[in-house]
Amino acid sequence: MKTKSLGFIGGGRITKVMLQVIVNNKTEYKAIVVYDTNPVVLAELKKQFPGITLAGSDLEPAEQDMVFIALHPPVIMETLELVKDQFKPGSIVISLAPKISIEKIASKLPHIKNIVRLIPNATSIINEGYNPVSFAKEMSDWKKQTMLSIFRRMGHTFEVPEPKLESYAIMSAMLPTYFWFQWKELIDLGCKIGLTEDESHNSVRDTMLAALRTYFYSGLRPDEVMDLIPVKPIGEHEAQIKAIYNDKLIPLFEKIKP
Image (cartoon, rainbow, N blue to C red):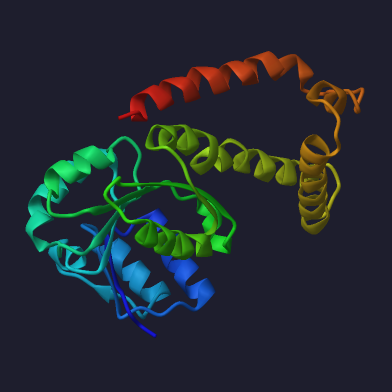
């Protein structure tokens, strides 16, 4: 039964992921209303998800039962100021961004009790997300459980203390970007040294999956796992790679903290 309407303020990548989750799960809502300042983005979303309604401004999504704030942190507060009078008192407001705390959101929406922060993961597009969530203290346990049951359609969703959300943004939401380009480069390299594209793709994919299982489930210590292969062709660059992680990710964490 269609019982809720959804509004998305912002139509970027994560909105696309969440709309795909809805399609994957064949979930029905009274309405799904999306607004973005970029008409090209909206047109592409409508093409991919014809069932959505495109809004003429961010006022319309704010009027829905569940409102997702899918914006970059620097523009969230000013946007909330513009649309604050459109929210219904019983609405559930879900922010998908780091940095802007529940307390800050509540300062713009004092009449809204149901405020949620979710750090979604791109892997939710195949229903295998790893999605931490925090709730406003004023939310009832019943509403929390209702929201968790909805979010779990995205994959593994779990409640965490709000101060941990930015840590998960670094160690979950952004984590695939640290590896995806490497996998593509290795597949391309395999083609250069004699494998077909399918052979190289399968080799990287299957070996990577087995390597993950070996590291996390073999029962061996990390140093024992890494000692299983005697030849390490890029071993001399390990220190440099570790430095890149620390030099880039720790300052980014400091930047996105509330």
